[in-house]
Image (cartoon, rainbow, N blue to C red; front, side, top):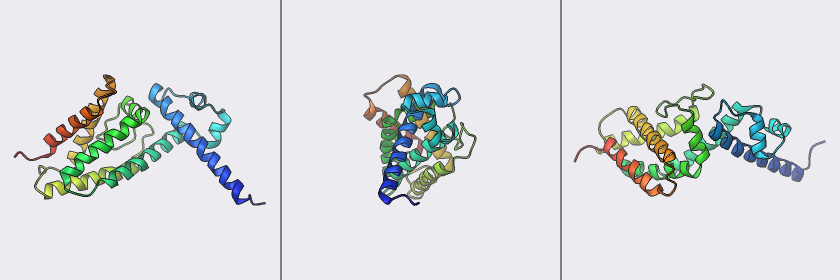
Length: 206
């Protein structure tokens, strides 16, 4: 017998609630312990759910990790696409604002990606060993903007893919330093600092 539409909606809402609760908990556990040392029981405890409920929603740590990455990618892609129009330098500066603000608003996601020790300049997954195809959408959009800046005569004439890698490395170093020094109240200073370094990297000399 088919389930009534109203009951099906309630069931789906409950499922989504559990998945959100669990992925938030997993992100915190991964940030604190690292992916390798984290256990599903740790995630269940952090989320306040049973292991049975946890495994009913996710098959294991890899499934959890991929779910987190997919959600974060979709959110970042929306922010990135929203600031893709206009002169290339203006776009790059606005991207710094939305990108840094996003990572600082999701500190567990930031800490987890920093503690795993992978180079952000390399678009591959350090945890599960996969190519990060979904994140390449963000990278390609950035490369298009970099090429636009070259065509506008504002950016140095270097390979966009290389400049994109250097920008991601710059983000990683500056954010790691910010987290290490626990400078929780200096968002505007951090954003201005990254913008300044990116301008030095990209812009032709006057």
